[in-house]
Length: 213
Image 1: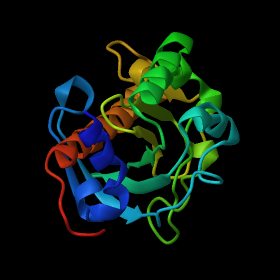
Image 2: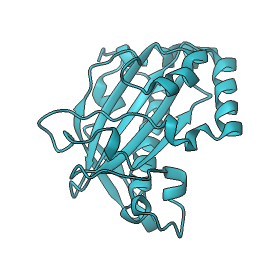
Image 3: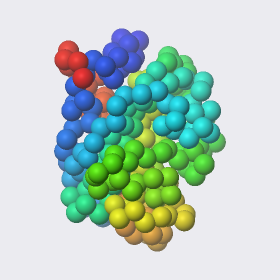
Image 4: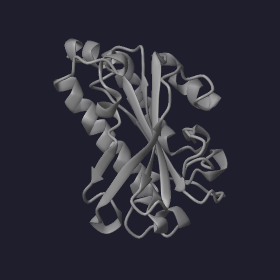
């Protein structure tokens, strides 16, 4: 397990970016009612620290595990109706630190708090150029315990419309949900893309590439 942690901590600079954020992501069964989804990458942000890229309150919550590096990319769905930013915070924590953070997220319901919603990455001159804080509709945050990484995703409409009441993906993707993000499938967008990036990360940890990103 310690070896897996050491491997995962270096993935942000040891693995090609296309392996961490594929140009196209297949979301078979990821949409509402099990509909298929396909996401196309719009842009990848330069790797950075977390300050300025995450909300200060979220930074405060993540402070116990530290932020070694932040990777982000933004995707659009096949209809170009929705945009989603997915991110990976590579932390400085060991197994115990990540388990403690995961426990806190679960006990305090931190992944459902609107004031801890991740920020978007809105690359200029793209369909996601207007995807700012006010456009966030649904989000998910996953604290991994088998790697020093926090995976998140945040979704919204591609037309730049503002959202008065964002809804966490777990609620928006639940059967029978009737909110605007839920009916648009934006909870599924955030959850589906985050899940697949997370799966890819775990696969890469198991068999990392030796090529630099």
